[in-house]
Length: 315
Image (cartoon, rainbow, N blue to C red):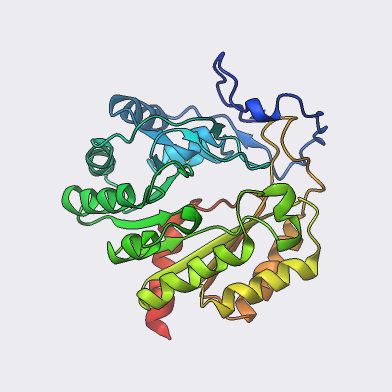
């Protein structure tokens, strides 16, 4: 059985800012994009654990097509700082609006859940919280510390927002010593105004460079989506920019349109093209490149981290 994963939408409008926008028709997905429905027992156990501790996951909120596979392996990406984002990116399905206060018990609950799941590697991300003085950096720090206490054998990857220039935010998160610091560029510079209007390409690059300067031993990581109208030479320029910033690992995946109100799909990139991009990226000096139609920032993150670590040891 094949299906297209669809979020459970409540009666509350998730994207009020997009309500009056014209629909963008979505082309039929090719066979290499479709995934099987999640039915495994492990998937159900992961879902129960998330509900038990009142946790959010980007797997659900962003309508990730890999949720069935990942949750069946008890791998989930924890989303801290609530489930309401202060921005309205054209590609993202996370709800937009005014967030509630910060849950001070959230870091502990994340730590306990990861321990119960027995994860080797965990990814912690968040919504954008432009309403907070530090952009939410302190909650990242507290979550990393809670994970070290409750799941000391688990390696920790953070996927941070850009903190919109909040002074000291990047330093605080890096100094908390996650194993991987990830911040996604998402798309090529030319498309930022359309796809990621609340962010700036150069600023995101500076964050990745800054993380490496603070801790040269930390693994840095970034990713983009393709199929939004970018050109091949623009993708290669992003690769070069990331290497100048000494980024170790790049992810490239197909953009999938969450709703008709989101940015339209320009085209579906073929598996062969992804293979070519991976080869080029490795030639440019990345320690690792994950480039497939279904690649997402945290897809196979545990296996990718093991590969990164072993590759560095061989250099």
